[in-house]
Length: 113
Image 1 (cartoon, rainbow, N blue to C red):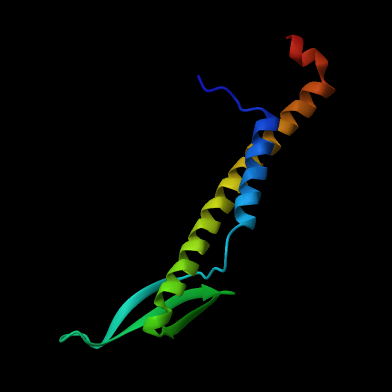
Image 2: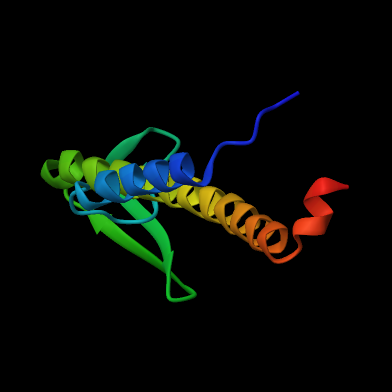
C-alpha cells in the first residue's frame, strides 16, 4: 500500500522544480533533422528545424555552425516540458490533498467514523 506524501513534501518538490526551471537557459521547441538536396546520392546536406508555435507550423534552415546551439536549446526545451509536467502532476496531487484536508477539518465527525 502506497503512503500518501504530505502536503509539505509536495510543496518542497514543487519549489525544487521551480528552482530547476529558473536555471534553464535559452530554449526552442521542435526537432532538428539533416536533409539532402539530392537524397539518393546524399549530397547537399543541410539542417532543418521544424516546430509548431502559436498553432502554426514553422520550418527554418540552420547553418551547420549553429547546430550545437540549436541542439542545446532543443534539449533545454525538452527538459522544461518534462519539469512542467512533473509540476502539474504534483499540483494536482497537492490540490486533492488540500481539498481532502479541508473536508476533514470541516467535518470532524467523518474522521471518527
